[in-house]
Image (tube, rainbow, N blue to C red; front, side, top):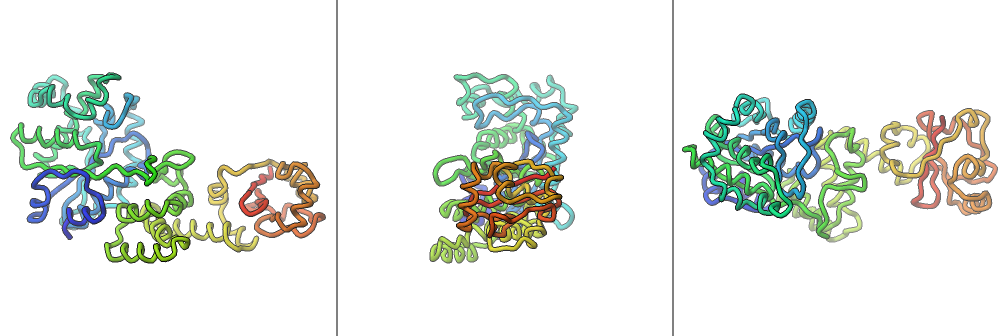
Length: 425
C-alpha cells in the first residue's frame, strides 16, 4: 500500500509538503503525531490523527505516538480564541494514562519491524533549562517567522501570552529531537497544525538535521457546516465511562447520508471497493441506512470491542424494535440508563409496589406521565401505553414489584416516541 495514495482516495490530505510522496514511495520511514493531554480521554475528533498513524503503520512505516507531557503544560493556541487553562502535573499524568490506554487499541506496539513507539516529550524537556532552550533553540527562529503563523496572527488583536507564543517553538523542537534520535522524517496532524509542523521542519533544517516533511488532514465538519464530534451532551468521547458504547454507536448511526459517505472513508479501515459498493447500495435505498449501520459497526468495534458493539445492537433491537418484556429484562442497568439518559424520570416508593398499584394511579398520582386520569384512561383504551414494552390493555391492570427491571425500574412508553423511566427506591 502507498500511504499518500491511500490518504488521497479517503479525502484525508489537506496540505502536503513537496517531496513527501516521493520519499515514502521509495523508502520506509518513521512518522509521528502528537497528542496533548487536555482531557483524560480522546474524543472522536482525535481519531483523525490516530487514523493517519494507523494507515502509516498499515503501509509499512513506523508510527510514533508522542504524548505531550511537556507541551500540555504550555497549551497550543492553534484554532483557539482564548488562552487555555494551564493544567497541573497530576492532572496531566492522569490524562496521559487514559489516552495511552486508548491509543494502544489502534496501533501495534508489540511486534514487527515497524511496531509503534510511544514517547512523552516531558522526558527530554524536564532537564532542559530555560536559558539553554532560548540559547540553543530560540536563536534559530526569528520573531518575524513565528509572527507569520496563523495561530499567532489570529490572536494579535485579542492578545496572547509569551507562553502560548513559544508553543510552536516547543513543538518544533519535538520534531527536531525525534528526527535526530529516532530518524523521524514526517509529522502528521490536523490542518490547524500546519504552521506548527512547518516550524518543526524549518528548525530541523536550520539546526542541521535530516530531511523532514509535513502532511495534514482536513478538519472534519458536518455537511451543514456545524462542528463534528458533538452530541447534545457535548463531546463524543472514546472512554466508555464518558460516552457509553451505546451512545457512541448511536452517534455514528445518526449521521446524515452526505456525512456518512466521507466519514466511512476517514474513520474505518474498509477498502475502496467495499466502500464504493456500500455507497452504491445505500443510494438505491437510503431509508435502509446501510452506510450508517456498517460505519457504526466498524468504528464501535474498533474503539470499544465486538462484544460492546453486540450489546449496543441488542439494546437497539430490544428497545426500538418489536420485543418482549423478557428480552427487555436481559439489558443491564448501565445499558438501560445509558439508552434512556435524558428522558423524564420519576421516583416511586418500592414499598408501594409490593402491594401493587393501579396502572392509572401509577401514571398520574405516583408519577406525572399523564396530567390526568381521564387522559391516561383514554390513551390506554386506544392502545397507546406500554409498560416494559408490553401494551397495557386494561385500566384496572395492577403493577407490582415483579414488574421491575433490574429490581428497580419500570419503563413506560406513551405513544410511539415518548419514554419515561420510573425508579423504585
